[in-house]
Length: 284
Ligand code: A3P
Image (cartoon, rainbow, N blue to C red; front, side, top):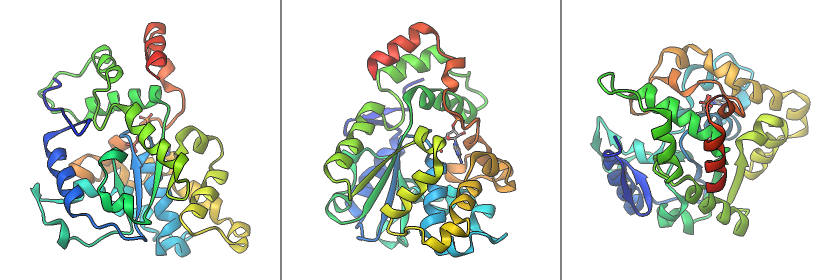
């Protein structure tokens, strides 16, 4: 079951992700205006992409429009993952020819990012989620996207692997610490957000994100309800019911509906035994 994951440059990934990481590292020339949204899978990537797009795209000024792109497209279509974007029709394409989006997503750990990202003034936003919930979310996701011919992965098996760090782009602790250390040493370069904080007080976190991205909300925008509008547009409840997210497909042909499950904090309590909680707490 684990044969499709390889450890490369200290993190676990699929073979095609090795190719795309190498290509990303060799060819990506970061510009000072780029913003990378970095995450461990299942930690809130889709949400962060939606929020950053709502804040930093030209469409910010059409936030009240019924035609806003976030109503018609999945956030992964609006903010591509660079390491997946370099595949066109499953063929590795020439990265130098691709149009550079201002916003891009990546799951690659900080240590393996292209050196031009580290050297340039390009910004990074990281979202960190409690590993208990990230694990449960990943386990559901893995079982949803697996080929029908494959048996579901039992929770116990997935849990043991997770605790050993064997999960896409993991170990999760290396991933989180890599970005966390960078945000501590260079807070102007890396903004470290937490899924749980965003759930608790999205208004405060949105202001922080907008300021970091260089697009603070004006007094008129605040008075006009722009922050509340962005929060609502990007909320789990709103996004999961949009037609595009109920029936469309985006990255790597995943069905968009699989990206929206419960969107809650603390769902792990319904799955993990006291022994597993103790084990993962020790790892953390
Ligand atoms: P759950 O499986 O716990 O529900 P990612 O976007 O990194 O793939 O993470 C997916 C997780 O984020 C899923 O968690 C999903 O339900 C949740 N999610 C997706 N969109 C969200 C949103 N707009 N707000 C909050 N959580 C969201």
